[in-house]
Length: 248
Image (cartoon, rainbow, N blue to C red; front, side, top):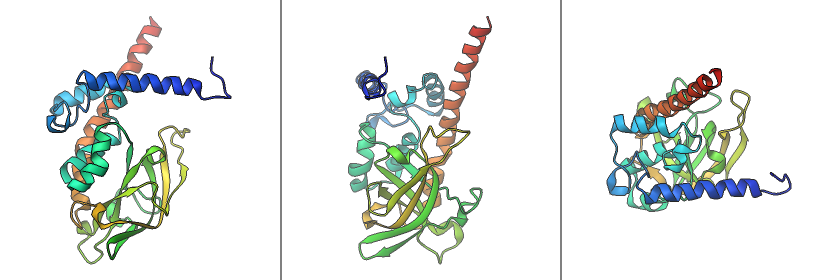
């Protein structure tokens, strides 16, 4: 029985999940969304859609395969745009399942329908980027080792070329999680409100080129929408199956 005075039940559950992850990796059911060159299964869009739906019929299914949101999309993005330095420090630990990550774009003070109005800013100061801003619905920020912050770096450019993506380790001074935002009455999922107050990171943490934020975001969000929706469809299908069994 679960003892509220200890974390034994939680530890046992984590041990079980980690054992299943090791088994999935050993048997080749690991990183279905990534190419063979980085240890993935190299599935195409249709096959990956089917795997995403089937895996999600078990709550931890995508995580066991190391193909869960938001890490799945972040791996995909880093694979396309990361420098060798970024691959070593950020992508490779994700591929190995050693850390979690998040993607920080949405803000509470502007319309999410028009991201050209986002107000988070980053300026170069010598060999560092200095970031100031206010984000929310940054899913998984409370358990992430790093985030990718969407911010304005080129204010003189036309609006879709003003923004860049910068990798920020979550233990950087000035990076602060304000709260986990409740959604549909629950705080499960870790959809966090985040403040960045004079956060300084090395210039090497710029992902892609200056002003390429929208290019990178579309590369990430486009395929991510497909597989995220398929995961939800898998959960819905499982719920429907359980309902039918109960009704009979």
